[in-house]
Length: 229
Length: 229
View (cartoon, rainbow over the protein chains, first blue to last red):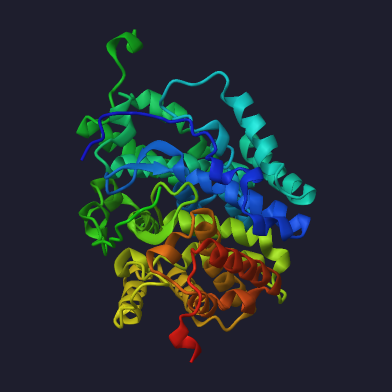
């Protein structure tokens, strides 16, 4: 089943999840535990942030919480294919945390129109959401997310590679998925997923085999004549 | 919004996700990588296994993939409250893996009727699903899941405690959630979530404060007169 309508709802944090609206029992908690619970409740909203990608059964779009879980399993299972030595526990931590800012800022699809305010929105989201935690944990998660975003360490490069690879697999399993939704070309997808190659040559080879087959199926467009001039 | 109809669909593995139905590009992969990709594709189906719990916004039920992600964050943030010294990376690994068998065996709600064949179904699921992986990784995940199920190590006790705690929080945020759906009593919930106390006295105290407030709200029934005789 193809999903023909593309709608993103930039979710407002539901009332039930705001820090000031926790039930009375939370008032009796030690302040540190209370902060931790407020954070864990707030991030429940990531289950309502829908991505462009279709899940493999093609029944619906994927949300960012289940995507994050799937990526932790990608990291654990595919660790040996990293180009560089990585601390896989740190990679997993980054992937657990990497989309939490979307609770406030929403998801920006890789192949969709980019929002010029997205980076500022994500920075504000990081400040609010990680700021719910006790200071030491707030700093830990913020540093983890900053490292992922910067993609300058071996761990972050591999984490980013997996974050780019997983939707490629989902598209390959859903008759083109977001490539067809957005009329993506081979050049575009190769450019936008190049992070895979920075994390793993092996997985980049696989991605390119997938792209070539997708062209054969007509799921990815080849370069237009105008692009070849 | 309360969800009034309780339906579980024991998901058959969708055709698109069976190992024999991967696209042609997968045939060219090295056998080890091919096995790894088959596993990562198969477990995508965990996103379609719905639990009894409502997500905090109360818009729908939670699926086991996003639940697993949420639990990894519980482990990372609440580690300091474990009764015993734990290796939190191992706890996180257990929580990543703990529900994968539900891809084949489905979820058994804590407060619902127990299926006498569930354990056998889960064992068969573990054999099939972890068996998709290369032997060394298959063994690693099987041992991880077995340790979680046995709940005899400090790491597994804490992982189990979090797996029991998270739905308590969701029920507290959704006006009783599954407690109301299943007409659960205080005695029942105290007994069925006792694993929380084995993992963390602090979190067990919090759970009991939540239970007491739920009784005040009428979300949990008190013991019936017949139980007091």
